[in-house]
Image 1 (spheres, rainbow, N blue to C red):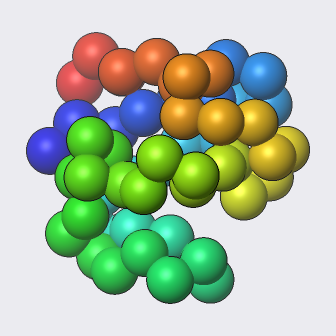
Image 2: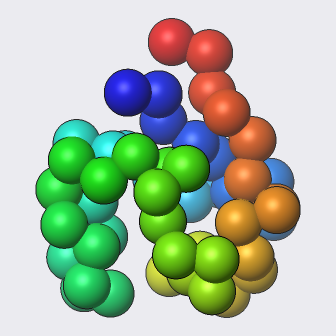
Length: 54
C-alpha cells in the first residue's frame, strides 16, 4: 500500500501503521479512511494529501 503525504505540514500517512491515536487500525488503506478523517498533525482533510512515489 502506498503512503500519502500532507501537502500542508508534511505528515506521512503509512497504511502499515494506520493512525491508532485516532482509531485507525494498522493495515487501513488511505482510500478506506473515513471521509471526516483529518491530518493528525495539522487538521486538514484528506483532499490535502498526495500519493507518494515509492
